[in-house]
Image (cartoon, rainbow, N blue to C red; front, side):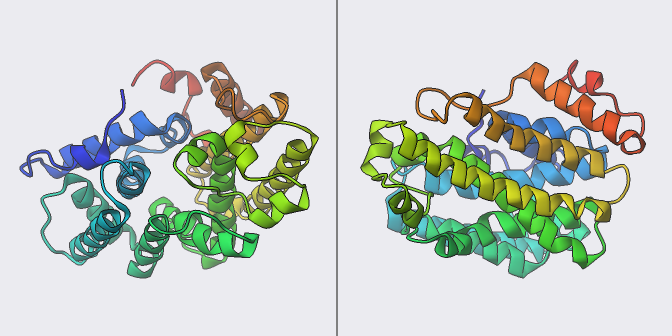
Length: 313
């Protein structure tokens, strides 16, 4: 069942803080099976922070991903209101929005910085007016706020203290978003957006209109191989920083990293056809990947068993 974060945030403001976190958990569970799966491998206190962080970001996403609900200028105004209310709540102000209550509590406890929240919101606001990125460098301006700083905020939630981890966390966040871009090419096209750098399409002689036609040929395969190689390079950079994550919390990040990277494998197995069906990992594949991570990093599991997460909500 999908949970609309924007509508969910309109529920009675009398919820307890724990109930606010529960709502955030429901939002993550409804919208991100892969991310939710790996989040459940964390201990409860850290897990609830991840739920809150995800729900806040999903809330902003829903504003710009539902163009029929608001015109672009209305989306921008809604995002600006959300940003100011979120920052005010993070500073200790009162909010009736349960998603923001949980997020602000997490931000204060974990030391999430205001500049990172602003960077994230800047990219969300870009989605109201920018629909194409001529170069990868210009796309990076978007992914910095929408993905790289998310990696930094996750470091804060996970209790990573060494800032040398940040470039690796930024790489992981960006790699995951690039993976989503490749998986969701058709969906983004229907929303009027192209997140593939136009210079890359031109390099392979592929026209953006052909994305709408679902053309899969040698040109498109070459384009996808190029984009997948870029994402895998970022995953490799992320791997170099795993040691900065506190023991016992690294396992969940490893699982998330492997599951997202596996989407690239599914795309390749489908002959790069991302138009006829969504590339995703099945439940058995998720369990197998989680078990493989546990086998390679036995000291990280700390008694968590993948079977446990398969038997409950």
